Length: 90
Image 1 (tube, rainbow, N blue to C red):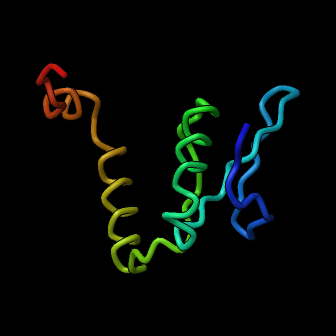
Image 2: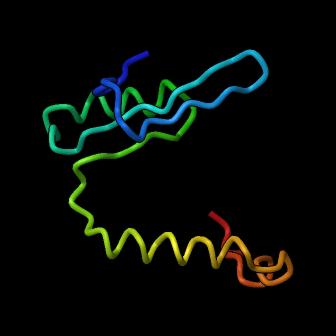
Image 3: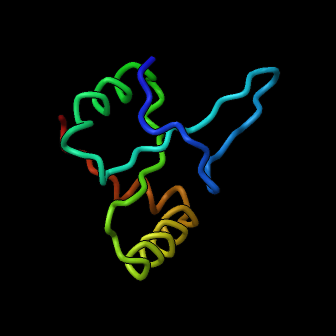
């Protein structure tokens, strides 16, 4: 499996599920486009679709707003979520 920038990150995550331990890869966007092929391989080979992105340039205020909105959406009743989901095929 190809991984990008696997150095320890102060916010890297590990989770224990039964007896398996898995870690989340850290992707440093400051190294793109030179690392773009590696990134594509890492994402497709892991099958997880989950990684932490650093050096992305997204302002803290926008990240906080996104977290607030995410919490709001996750707290909606299932009926409301279903009513508002995209039903367009494809």
